[in-house]
Length: 516
Image (cartoon, rainbow, N blue to C red; front, side, top):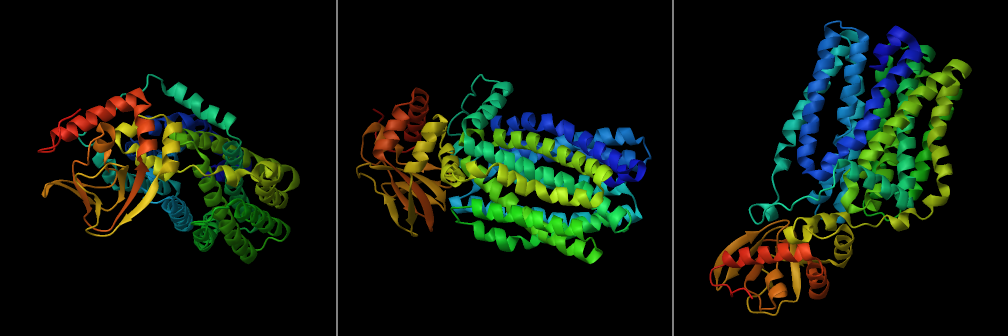
């Protein structure tokens, strides 16, 4: 779209169009992200992909049909707004799918690598399509990709086993989406670490917005590569982002991510400083590879830190705010480059793009010293607790406290985890694998990820009513008697839901002890 605008109106129109494309996303990002917190995030993700496919297809039709470019810009802006629902929904969904905390970082690494592959292949294909067929076919291909994405995520909309018919869904609080949105803003006001990281992500996206314009200007005005050249330059940037997997893979299990964040910012600045001082085709391609590595390392480190630091009940809302703030950042970066280019020239604009990340690090340096110490929220464990109906009713601070009390348990195939008639001392949640429950040698049910057991003995103060045995290798989390009872019995709503849950489980267990 920027190449389309640059062709007809030059750098100024390209910069203005970038702002037009981003403006709806600035408002739409935070609002649309609330959907992911107020309903199943998998459903929000699927609907988001479907909406994106529809709007992108409309843009393609208007472009191919030769419609007015202002209509094209308006439809493209709607497509950008629809795109903002994707990352918040993914961020809210992934903790419920991860089995271990390390998998959350692994997902960020692999997600970044996946995005990097797209940044490598998509711009190259876009450059080819722009040079041969025109921008309409680029949007048609994007619409097809979004439609495939909508189909791919359909299986994720299946309800977790712990919620399938066990209990009616918990009623939502009466608070509306505006209250949810204000709460997300309130989190940023209260949490310095989250606020600092949001600023860094905004600066990162400002750098990306500047890059969009810089690649067009460098390709056409400095290197004279033609309108397809911007796609080729961006493809090399994407190639660097793919290579970054060698760097970001080392983040898995790493407790301190601020040092690689700082190194990535310095590498970004150095690459654009050299490119601005001495622009050649070969040098530009090599330096954009370096910039791609730095950008993706910065992206994975900053988003992983923010995901660790986010309160668990406001993940999608915070990332929705990031979409809005980030959209402003992209718009600012897109406007900054034409302004510098028109006054100081394209070389100065390139150097200015490189200064964005180092300047952000310098601005936030004092707060960054303590960020790693605050980024320790156990989001995977909290998501697992939320899969248990009566624990899902607990307030977020209590859930976080329980998550920090969980004890990981590895069970070998055939290992007895709880024995019928024993004293109940722990509540268990299955994180990975399956567990068979039986009574008097007769099978009762098979428990999978997100299912809990052991609550009857604890809540009714009776011996274990069933024997639970690992069907294969299983990973569980155990919660000791005292914190479990203190949490469940100390919350009226949770205690009520737990009582109904126990009554139903006892009613479905042949020969089980009568309820107290």
